[in-house]
Image 1 (cartoon, rainbow, N blue to C red):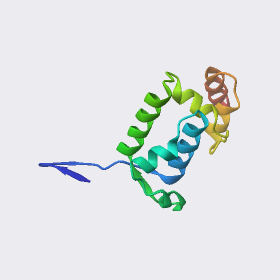
Image 2: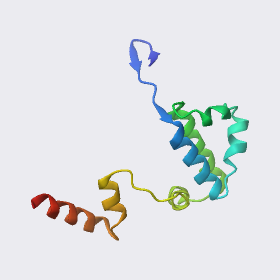
Image 3: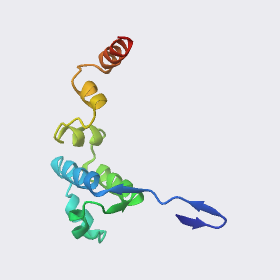
Length: 114
């Protein structure tokens, strides 16, 4: 927690696996994510540490720099499209396997009624 006078502010962080995915996704859409990290003096050796945490503010600044650098108004969508698809829970699989989100909700509620 960071201290802001008399108020404690939680220090939000992001896990290494998510940061690696983000760097790969931003690189896939044409943003030189690794150069950005070197300019910001990120400790890139930490990307190999599975339990390392990264400050949320650094991740937000990375997104902002990528948005400015690419000029892509749909950067998040394009970056996400480059990621490997995976479902890490039954609910995620249900959503991913449906063509429309509304279908997923109907299927989930009807199976719960059984």
